[in-house]
Length: 225
Image (cartoon, rainbow, N blue to C red):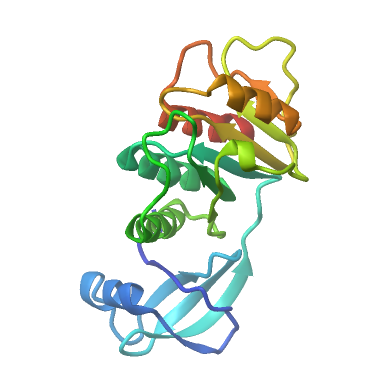
């Protein structure tokens, strides 16, 4: 775990002085107790990683900058809303594994139809922490979509988790891919019909019935690695 790694959304250039934002600055000074002259790592969530020298009061002098490689497959994981703790776990682990983009939506059998502003902020913070912890260089984005019946066709290949499917197509191993996972109660029949109408391909992740958050992690692991 790169415990001396900090996040900034800014661009990173050799010799530039940057200031960390509030929580990262607090973590640098009060939690990690870094002092002037200490070396740390800075990641900007856009693929850049730099070493930096601590100046004072949360300011860093950028030194060496490198570009971290992307995975061959850029995976968008579409997750139906489920229990907040389960959703948080799925997004944390999905970030660690390498998911590029999260799409959240209310499923027909979801218990929630939306997320509060505080919940969205918390999910964003979880992705930042998981990005730093896992050592990856890109910060996944989070997008909220309406119910599946309101979706329009995607330009990227679409697959969705389902059990007991025959003649499954094989998801691509590189490029871009969207994989959708239903809520705890599973897909409604109307959602299955709509997903297929959108060009979606059913794909069985496991012969057993998986919890939604387990399915999210299994899908990310199988498709990305």
